Length: 498
Image (cartoon, rainbow, N blue to C red):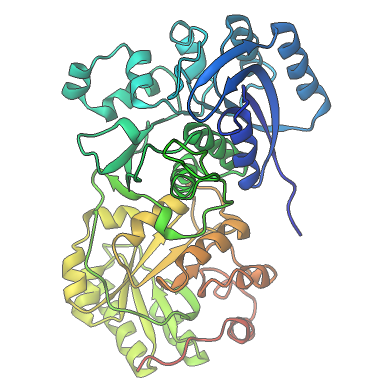
């Protein structure tokens, strides 16, 4: 059954050509599973070649539309703000975002100009502090960012685009995306920069032939708003919205005829070829491919003792992870060695969490590393040893980072709320899991993990994820033997390791 679409409020302009403004917003929001509520603040005479005219909606009419939206509709989950051509309308809307809509996720696309002609905007610069304090994701292109920050090209050259993004974060924005068609010295790539207090990265895609597509900025910001409404983390929304727009540029909705066609709207992006390359400072960018492991690893328990390793192997489990977090355990090397011996006796696949040097020394099947561990691990040493590499991810952004390392499998989590440890991310849920599993199908084996129990296992398996991992589902059950058999009956065991 399809879940109810969350509501996204849109404050923007009608484009009579249909390629940008509210038309593009509605299409993009619907493509990402949300429902757009348009608050028209102006109407424009546009084609794909020019902006011929614009006329503002009265502040009274805009205020009336806003009042109806807030009183007659259910909860608003997100807001997208595009061109705000009138000072009074801008003030009315900012006041609503500071009061009745306080705390709602907001994507603000500070449109100052149109590529095909000048659109008069209200004075955003003098209201910048108010705007940023209510904004979840701020999405200027580079010229807009420079103008709003009061920077020139010399300042940009000196301090860099990441520092430009931090300028807006320091003023109150939670996240900033400086859009990439204007970035970089290279004419070959479009580099979008994402900046928040905790995370900074670049998203890179090849530039498409021609002059681009009409409405790309609108599509990006409205897709972001819909994804925030669907509870995506900002960084996950960023990479998915970037892929969506890139797909739309490569496959526009109308013939180009040598001009700038409207960006295409093709639904949720389900092919990796549209997703950007990720550059995050301090995180490895590339790695040679690691050895393969089966696409279907079967039931994959994660345990913290040799005793559990032996017990589960004897019950028929053939993929297992030993996770001992105490690095100062004097018996750690011996426990890993003993577990490896047992796994080879049973022809099973044993992954060691974190301790890759000890795993290499003991001759384990593989190691499992989290995102923070990957920053410092000697990946080439692990690969040359012949060990498989499994990586933990928590959403699309980390999935793309992990995929760039060519691992043996990617763990997708956490799917449901979990008590095994405090998680900084929100549960992914089955819908997001299904999307990620589909993206990685026939690319790399996948493992679902986090809060998976027998009562929700059928939903997880319906996503066609390759394997299912669990931490407490067996070890904390009243009857581990019976419970293990139930899990094995449903998940299978992936076969013996030959």
